Every structure is written in structure tokens, then in C-alpha cells.
Image (cartoon, rainbow, N blue to C red; front, side):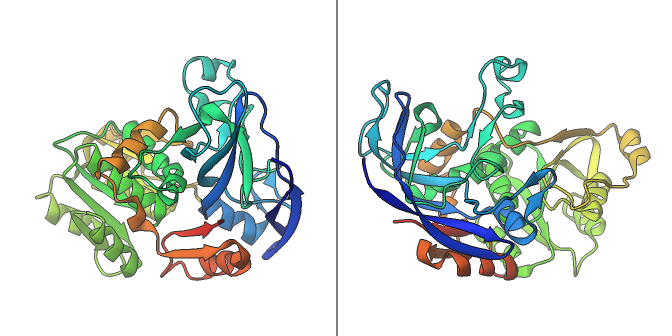
Length: 348
């Protein structure tokens, strides 16, 4: 396909603009996707606010966005499993395929990864993208491209649940009712845990958690977490905690409320990268700590969970912005976290 496309670029901290770029041409193993929805992730907001995450530093003009869904409009000659008109969810990270982690199937740990919107790799707040066909997953008829865009954060939630070996008969707590907390809660429910409680300090987010199927919620501004969990579990504590807030206080609370022999999965990144934790208590309880970095081999199961109705993915969306309104989309998502749980950008 020839021509140009509109691209939203970050021109500096808190500054968005637009440029025109040529529509990319797909290689033999790629497809060209006309993007329809792209989610705004917490990492997008962090880059927008600060210009960096750790050693990853934005050099403008930079394209944000790594949660895309769209429709195939052109197919490379080596691609057999997709055709023009297929609606797809795009997994945003292309790995090397031959390092020890890729060979073991733990490709999310590959150090040689090209990942949308991770400097210096541009993201996809744009009209088209050429992407490796094996990383484009066809959506069933009853899953639309907005849900396709949200498969990416849902994959994080399922990976967290899998890391915690979630299964029926357990009781779980999720710290944080933002997007990742909510998809983690829904993933836990989809994997058979009937009792999942969500903790946050923002009541509107807790209301959203209840709407999406949480067994109960705890507003930690109003209740003592340990007392509340003890009441809900008859003093036993919980089997599994998913920590998505990335805060020292919530991680410490997780250690206190998890029962002996339980598991804590750390998903949220702390602002400092360091915490002081009651490890003696963790040792006494013989707790298992697991961590999450993105996901691996999750997209098919996440798509199936949405298609089967086990996960109400559209339910996390509170705001839809047009691509032309990208400045307001980013500003609002950053400034109004109490009301905006998840924003998506409608590209076309």
C-alpha cells in the first residue's frame, strides 16, 4: 500500500503533536495492519510525564502506544495463516528467537527484544503498522478490535495468575484496582478462583472492580487491611496475592495477609525500585515470591477467555479518545486517575 499516514508523536514532556510518515511496507513474514484502537498504558503515561523509565529515555519525536488492535489490509508473500480482512490483536514484542531464554520458551526474558514504545523503538499511535505475522493473533467473530487492543494488558494479568499457580479452591487478594489490577482479578476468576478481593484507595476504581466480578473490595483509606482480610478469611489469611500497585506499603501488607505457605506475585514497579520489607515474617511463613515481566504464550488463552465470556474486557474501558485528540487523551489519563481507569485511542 502506498501513501502516507498520520502519526501522533511525543515532542517533549507533556507535548504531543502529529507528523506524516510513509505507510510501511510489510516484509515477506509480516502483515500490514490498519490500526483501529490502541490502549494508553501506564508506561505511556510515565514516558509522557517524565521522559524516561529507568535507562529507557525518550528522544523526541517519539511514538507512544503498545496495545494495538486492527484489521489486516496487506499480507506478505510468506504468510499463510492470515488474510486481508482478518481482525487481529498484536503482541508488541519481537524477540531474537535463539538466545537461551527464547529456546526455553521464556521469550519474554530475551534481552534482544524489539518492543513497541520502548525507546528507541517507536510505538503505534498511528494509522498503520507492519508487524510479524506470527505476532498477530486472529480474533474470533465475537471479539472486536477494541478488545483486541486490550489483550495486551490482559496478558499481563493472566501471566501474573499463572505465575501464582492460580486454581480453584484458593482465596486471593489483588492490590491495586487500576487496569492491571482489574485484569489480574478477572484472570484469577477465569482460572477458577471464586473468592478474589481487591484493595485500593480510590472508591470509583473499587466500584469498577465490583462491577467486573470482584468478590469484595477493601478501601485501605477507610479500613485496616489486616483486620479486613482476617475478617473475610476467618483469620486464615489468603493463599495468593497479586501486587500491582508497586508500593512498599502494599507489598508489606501482602506479606502480612498471606497465609503460611502462600504465594505473592509482584507485578507493579515501585518508583524507586527499592523497598524495605519484613523478610523475617516472610521466612517464618515460608512464602513464595514470584515476579512478572510482561508475558509469554498468553495471547491465545487470553483471547479465548474474552470470546467465551469469562472476561469482560470492555468493562475496564472508561474513556475513548480520538487520535486527533491525543494531547487531551494523554493529559486526561495522567491527571484524572481517580476517574479514568483505562483509556483507549480510536485510530480509525
